Amino acid sequence: MRRQNFTDDTVDYAAVGATQAHDLMQYPPENSVPAEDAWRIGSGEERFAAAGELLLSWAPLRAGELSISDVRPASGEGYSGVGFDADGAPVAPSSLEAEQRFAADGTPFVRPGTGIRLHGKVDGHRADAELRVISVFEEPRRVGFILGTVGHSIVSGEELFSVEWRDNDEVWFVVRAFDRPTAPTYRLFGSRVRRRRKALFARYLRAISPLYAS
Image (cartoon, rainbow, N blue to C red; front, side):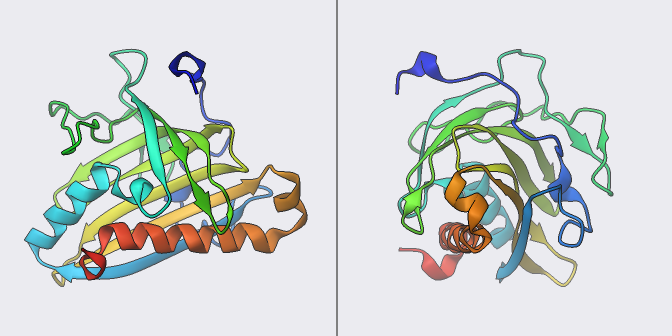
């Protein structure tokens, strides 16, 4: 698609930040299917740093048949994303003061407000979408970001990716999401939404876990 066709709209769902809610699995946004999983991917500060670097360079969205393009920063220089408190409620905007970093292929690292195109297939169906980074967090023991759909997807919703270095020295990769089906076949068959999400989670894990390193 031509670059100028990339929409610069806000996300296409109302429950922004709901992936932060502790009770997401019990009380997901209306008409949405929630999902979450976590995997131990090693231990120690070195593993945490390496996994965090992979995560912020978009590794989960560039795994298997998935790819991204048109990685664009926020339209306004002042945009700093959305911040959330411990209960997932929006608070003052988050901010990252560090200079822009880039992956080995020149792709800008994840930053608040960044828009991307996702391409590929999942479970035999297209996974094309336009997405926007809602929030980014880089803490001493937790790194990650929240990604929301802007449009052109078979589902509408949000994903939270994080790498956590826990007090017992274990490093965990955590993904939480909710999907509201928009394509007719997905609205009719809820099991397809769950199957799609399971396939996505498996790809994300392969991108981050050292068990799958080539």
